[in-house]
Amino acid sequence: MVGGMNHVIEAIGLSQVFRQRQGLFASARQVMAVDDLSFRVAEGSALGIVGESGCGKSTLARMLLGLLPASAGTLRIGGADLRGMDRRARARLIQPVFQDPMSSLNPRRRIGATIALPLRVQGTGRAECRRAVARMLEEVGLAPEIAARFPNQLSGGQRQRVAIARALIVNPRILICDEPTSALDVSVQAQILNLLMDLRARFKLTLVFISHNLAVVEHIADEVAVMYLGRFVEHSANAEIFAAPRHPYTRALLASVLTPEPGLGLPEMPLGEGSPDPTNIPPGCRFHPRCPLATELCRNQAPPRGAVECHFAASGAGA
Figure 1 (cartoon, rainbow, N blue to C red):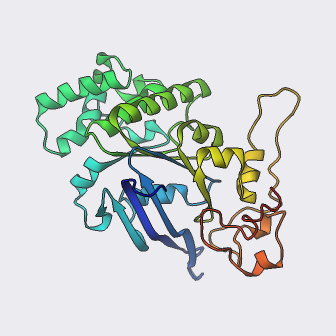
Figure 2 (tube, helix red, strand yellow; figure 1 turned 90 degrees about the horizontal axis):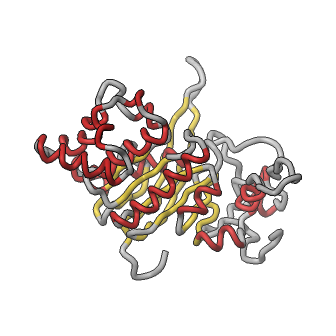
């Protein structure tokens, strides 16, 4: 977001609309998963995207990876339009790390072959692949003998390290991490996060880190985008978001985070009744049905687009 930076990801008016049919004779409903998003990610930085389930985070991840064409808008990766990019060139530039490594690893393929697959697709010879796999296993903290094993012979943390090794084997510039620690035990989560931070520095990676866990995002991201019904309702530097959140939704998310202090019990999420429905986006501010600060203005008029999409953000109302 700072002028003069080299931005490796640039989204302009990015949208994704699905059509959902409820029954044989029912008319299809429109699902606005991503709604006119514009943002940039600077080279070498880490953008954290947070929000509740169903807000559009994973849809956006699939769009960034080129797995899902945008319904509208432009997406540039490394300065090139993603729509016209060759699949192999795209794979050399941007790679994913998904939530559940057990489902993203072929159970019938040995670990060495799994890690080497992206190189094989690029036309790399077997001998060079073996050397690259050995180096990458060392980079992610796995023993060389792991290469001969199958996924079901590894722990969850080891499998996620394999998934990271597979992503990095082609030396990409960007990693898209979609809930990469949510399926792991808390102690293992910390190890994987520390590994990603270390690899980011060593490989000069740009990270897009998608999570519902604010504590995880605070630990790893330089900037944070808070997503609600397909929009970034607040997008700012990490320190600003966590020290002085300006959007009511961001404040509610932070208020719901578990605290280590004894005796405080479980936190409540002060968001009223109901949950966001992408098939029925309300008029005005899309957050107003759950917002304790909502007024008639919020119910009838969408807030201006910007770093904080709230009518009262500039005045600090309710902060």
